[in-house]
Image: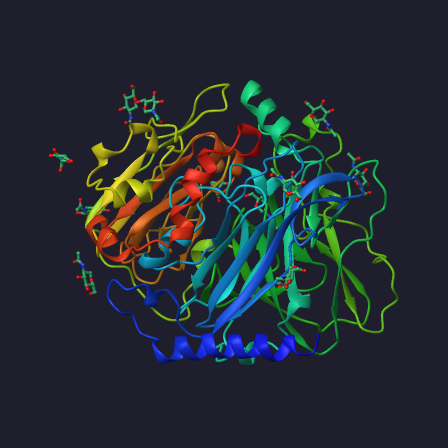
Length: 537
Ligand SMILES: *[C@@H]1O[C@H](CO)[C@@H](O)[C@H](O)[C@H]1NC(C)=O
Ligand SMILES: *[C@@H]1O[C@H](CO)[C@@H](O)[C@H](O)[C@H]1NC(C)=O
Ligand SMILES: *[C@@H]1O[C@H](CO)[C@@H](O)[C@H](O)[C@H]1NC(C)=O
Ligand SMILES: *[C@@H]1O[C@H](CO)[C@@H](O)[C@H](O)[C@H]1NC(C)=O
Ligand SMILES: *[C@@H]1O[C@H](CO)[C@@H](O)[C@H](O)[C@H]1NC(C)=O
Ligand SMILES: *[C@@H]1O[C@H](CO)[C@@H](O)[C@H](O)[C@H]1NC(C)=O
Ligand SMILES: *[C@@H]1O[C@H](CO)[C@@H](O)[C@H](O)[C@H]1NC(C)=O
Ligand SMILES: *[C@@H]1O[C@H](CO)[C@@H](O)[C@H](O)[C@H]1NC(C)=O
Ligand SMILES: *[C@@H]1O[C@H](CO)[C@@H](O)[C@H](O)[C@H]1NC(C)=O
Ligand SMILES: *[C@@H]1O[C@H](CO)[C@@H](O)[C@H](O)[C@H]1NC(C)=O
Ligand SMILES: *[C@@H]1O[C@H](CO)[C@@H](O)[C@H](O)[C@H]1NC(C)=O
Ligand SMILES: *[C@@H]1O[C@H](CO)[C@@H](O)[C@H](O)[C@H]1NC(C)=O
Ligand SMILES: [Cu+2]
């Protein structure tokens, strides 16, 4: 129908024009919710039979693929993402909720931030919801995933890249497009409902069957699924945007015979730092520049992972987690070099990263210490002796209804009430379990004033990011409460999060009541969700 096209364009042009005519925040008004170009995106959340590693299973994915389609945005856009929940498979959760990992959301849009029971309620089957996501000044590498329970393990994960037409680092690379996005993730053959049941019964975090690189992987004894190929041309420099969509496994990424120059971590530009390999925790993102300066050939992209004892799952083989870097002119074949785990030198030390634009942290106004402890032998994780339980009424609704201090929330909500416009320091003392917990803050990013990778406290030029490893050496970070809202702060190993390793950092409660004016569509979510039969939640 040719006539539909101009009508659609007219509609888009007029909404964009409206946004241009009133680009600026108007206190307390809904208008502030859209700035810049409006970029409409549709995601159909569906069940699909897929076999990323050769084992066919029912999955929950966006638009039928794992990973989901690229959401491509430009600096300053407002994304308007319409989610159509078409889930019908009763062996998995049928409700859903989307998180745009690392995107801040300003206060008056906080209710579109899809963290179930903190800022919203999940979306039931056969319903739709439109998230308004103003990207404002943010640029770089992000991703989206289900934030409901451990549902993203069933497949709902995909990339979100915010391109900067005036990237200050543009002279460092020649190519940056859909072909240079590298997504690594862990993959399980069973659905999350039985996996979660097993975890709760035994306290043993489910061990993945395989690791995938751009949606392709292999397991011991499985078919030889073709490895994902990254194509390059000799003489060019590529900006690879690496996203760790893992729910558990830690991958270590390297390319045979090529070094990498890191230029971005979690949406923040960093000074170029050369490494031979980099470890990326679940939820973390890096941009690295690879110069295609070797003889035309096929080279291995090594992405081995660690995540639980392989003895618990004989399918697991980290050596099979890999892809291929193929130069134009090379044969369409696997590299002839042996499959290795990559170099063990030239390791990224997070503490050596420096921001491209200096931005030292202010002195803290509030200090908080968070102790992470697992209850022996149980699937229960505590932060300061409290195992987080999602409340039935989302935190944001409690605030809109008048909650003013910590005692207005149940202890199990582990909610910290913080002043607005303050600098908060979070100190994670060294923890003695040997797991690296990638802690992720919603709503803003933080300075890493002490990285677990070093003993040095750096309050002069530390990087900012939104996922940081908390481990045996201790980690300290600082953030500003400039974005009032209840922001989830949790381990990105979703099995740990589900077992209680989470808190809520709620700041500016009065500002929230002034500025947040939820839509009727949002107000309807909780009553609708609460009315659903259990198997549709
Ligand atoms: C997802 O699929 C829908 C329906 O086919 C399509 O309109 C939409 O553009 C797709 N989304 C993306 C991000 O590709
Ligand atoms: C959703 O819609 C489909 C098709 O109309 C229908 O078969 C299914 O029963 C509906 N599911 C629920 C949970 O209402
Ligand atoms: C999934 O888990 C269920 C319940 O534990 C089990 O019966 C089934 O065999 C598992 N399926 C696979 C593919 O592992
Ligand atoms: C992704 O994160 C997981 C969990 O933190 C980690 O085990 C894995 O090594 C990471 N992947 C990469 C490529 O670094
Ligand atoms: C990568 O960097 C290391 C350390 O600087 C160096 O020894 C090595 O030769 C480099 N490799 C390549 C392929 O450039
Ligand atoms: C893992 O895969 C590699 C490459 O195919 C193979 O050499 C190795 O024996 C496998 N490991 C196990 C434990 O099966
Ligand atoms: C917070 O801790 C720092 C030490 O890291 C200390 O210098 C500062 O006085 C403390 N601030 C408050 C408000 O307790
Ligand atoms: C945790 O509980 C123990 C014993 O009940 C107590 O000694 C300790 O101070 C508590 N720790 C925190 C951080 O609240
Ligand atoms: C918390 O709020 C309640 C009433 O909502 C009030 O009685 C109490 O004094 C407040 N506590 C603090 C520490 O502000
Ligand atoms: C409130 O916290 C108590 C423990 O203090 C817990 O037993 C109870 O289940 C929690 N209630 C809700 C609704 O989360
Ligand atoms: C926080 O700072 C903003 C901008 O500087 C200001 O408008 C607002 O009133 C401040 N809020 C508080 C609670 O100080
Ligand atoms: C933290 O540092 C310790 C000691 O160097 C190391 O064993 C652990 O793997 C590190 N964890 C993270 C999350 O980087
Ligand atoms: Cu964890």
